[in-house]
Image (tube, rainbow, N blue to C red; front, top):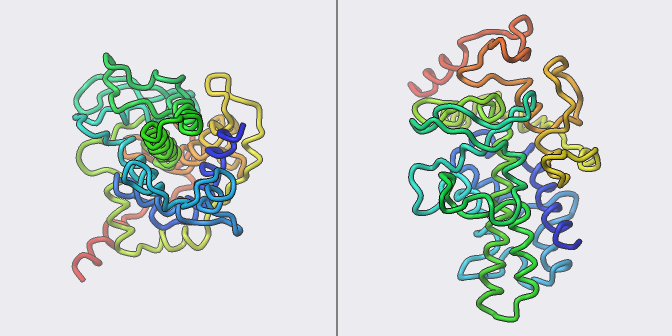
Length: 311
């Protein structure tokens, strides 16, 4: 269906641009907004989301078209924020559903914001059936913005005869795309793939933001040599718990903990789990990789950061 191709196109474009965008290396809320905006405004091999909206969907203004007083790219940007921090919801426990351990296929379970909680795997959360992400009685407030909800909003936008309803459903469509994109982005964060809460104090997402701002060579090298995305993973056998092909962007079921170099057909969560530590899983027995024998342990980062701060 056109709606599936439409949403699949922007998510696939996200992965490729995600790998080569400097802003991806710290995933605080502002970075999610920046990634989503850059992807919405960007292009790949001459293909742009803006042109797709104009030529395939019939939205004359493309990413600059207004729906409910905001442009399309603004709604996608807002989706990047609201998947972590929905309006009028405190604490922000929705993000307990943003974890996926590719070795266990499970989400987070443990203490989160001081509460003992467990969440859906982000792969499953992204594909919750219509209207089931955030029922009123559930702690995961913030609305229903799964893949299926977003497709439903898109269908309603296309079929509504009321201008008001059409505006509302298009706004919800583009916000929903931004929220699903957020889930993919989180699969690049080690803590999100190794069942490690990181909501209070000093953690990876804050540390990386500081290194990025100080032009650390780790980031400049990564920008110059991005890891490619192979769209063929979208054609692999479906995940029975999340049958829409976007599940493979997270996890292709290639990595089983025994082979960290399974090639580019790994999902993003698999690559992150196998190649990066989170704060509380350094040489943890639950994870075979990264191996201590292949790790050059240094204090370079803290010393480099201190020297740049002093300068």
